[in-house]
Image (cartoon, rainbow, N blue to C red; front, top):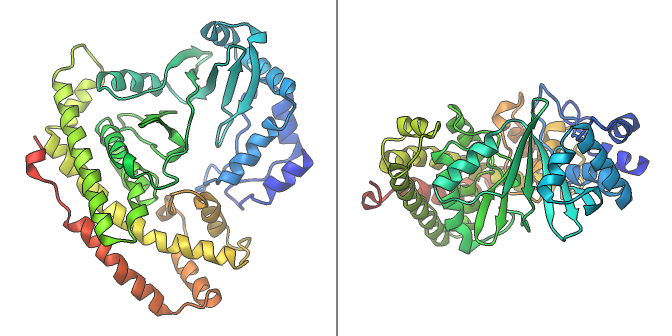
Length: 402
């Protein structure tokens, strides 16, 4: 345990992600009512975590002996008064749960493996929005995970069939650009929030939204701008193509054409819905036509994507600074963003919400330690302007909208 604590605490970030103490871990092990081991994130400051934070947090559970992991999880399920429901849903007894691993990111989410070679995921939910999403996805012919839902002692729980998951947004997936666009259109249409890469699973040729907690919220478009600028939504895969203007134009057109087509399909399906759905009036009041919807969202996407492209320059420079052995302990905001964006598609998510703009600092450090000149930024901005012009000049074909 001590080795893990030291490794994790080396990645702690002043005033943003606190270190673990032995007492924290022992409390999680010994208190069955403590269902999850959570990252100790600041409640007052923006606190983003990285893949290494996740791996080490998981390791406090996953490096325990298999039988202890299994026993610990079962005892926590008992304490939450949901073990009988879980076993009934799995159609097995306690002995039928043969292995448990923590697959959660910022908090514990448990993968249960059964003697019948099936795997399920049990998680505590902030609300029941995943259940509402499942109903909406069914009505609009979109994929959703096979899930069971339970409310116990004022807490919402979800038990989901585990899918052979693949990380999304982590590599160029040319054939899936249209799939991402289809998911983006549906997400925007139903005001599905928090659609970052950890809340999607790529299974076959489908993106499946998981861990839904934000749905039909009035401020969703405000967050859509932030997530796109921060490199976290479906359209952000377009960053993989900005090195070649012709190639980029092709994928921009491919993405938005698929987006428009899905919008038309959604509006057509909406007119054919049968049933009294609580959420239908919200959609009808917000979206008048597919053309209004697409043009409205297009006006949000273009400047947000442009902002994301600007941030990519600083993401690359920050990586180079670390590769050149610049320590980040005296720059906690830079340390946070380096760890949060490392090996991810994200780009300084919510940087506008922190008190000190990190970009001038990255620029200053780059000039000092990387041997670049101010002309570097001028040349890069000029090169990027051609890519931005493709975005700004791209417009929708009216014949595709109804």
